[in-house]
Length: 223
Length: 223
DNA sequence: GGGGGCTCATGCGTATTCTAATCGTTGAAG
DNA sequence: CTTCAACGATTAGAATACGCATGAGCCCCC
Image 1 (cartoon, rainbow over the protein chains, first blue to last red):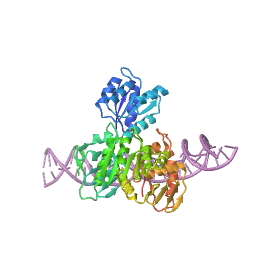
Image 2 (tube, rainbow over the protein chains, first blue to last red):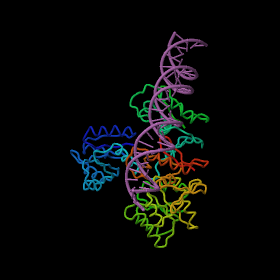
Image 3 (cartoon, chains in turn purple, blue, red, yellow):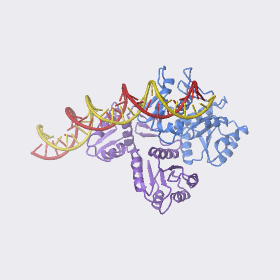
């Protein structure tokens, strides 16, 4: 998930970004309304978190502008003001939810996720297939040739990433970043260990091994 | 078979139509309540799939109007809301079944076909079944293998949600949102406690445990 | 004020993850 | 053809995080 934070208080924005990225959410920061509008117009965000009061262009105007242009991205307003009139103004301008400072961090992340989910109604892409391997994201189950395969959470994440990049060779660094959310090298062989486990589950006992190692580069999942 | 989809989210409707037509079902789409009513009045549909909340005319009003006119076409409501009042309102208005978003696609098509089949019998769907577990929504009683199970209100709601998403893994966040209507993380183990109690009632003493935990993800009810 | 149901907190047991040490494989150079 | 070094695979054990159960307290409704 990718969200845009439009907030003039750099420190607050930083804290927010750090917290959200721990929850696996990718964040982009814009430091005022004008920059924020430009970024939002560029698109590609699942949710916008917008401060209500900012220099150059306030949050209300920003969102009104976006909505006039037909942009439907969900917006969560942040504000130091908690009065009813203000809230109403925010919602009228096209905001989807509202959070009053100071807020509990868990609250922010819960709401961001709720907003993101609201958009993806009913039938999202919930099953990924690569060859005879199928992953059901909603049921959280994996099948190969009809046989159910029981995976641990990490293994599941790892396989999801590999399946989303099937046919491409995936480096250890990519896996550390995207699956483990380590932004440094842990100097251990965590990945090797999990690949080994995953292999034992998805390849052992089947004719065609799918999880291949690309020596010196990383791994690749092939149909 | 020919069904009418009344849904304002064009994307969701498109996905639905594509999926159903693969199952050999002909679909017609109406983008809001008023258009939907007109189309339904024209007739010729075996089942109506109606979003509960829409611009112009909401799903409830649409179905009430149809029923007043004597139209008995089976209706499947779609809704983002999972509350009891809401569900009862839907059934009272003349809906025959109810599906909570986000749903697995297979579930939608199964229910549409079930409704089409039940057309002759004319009975209304007030009982949800998953395996040997049955929930009577109106009588507010639950049976497993014929034995009556006494549940607390919260446990009932929780089980209803799990049954409506049987086979899918349901996260704690989803449960907090839909069953508790918390939009933040209460930082306690409320859910765990209720799951534990529910388990004691629906699984203890039966051969096959239905309520499974999906470690790191949530829970899943399996037949 | 009493009672039923809901929520919270604690400690325990265990599944899962990580670390580290050993073993196997590969490819290139002598 | 053999040897060596680098790289990857596998395994077992330790550390950790997660989920579970239970009892106590709270709150709301009667």
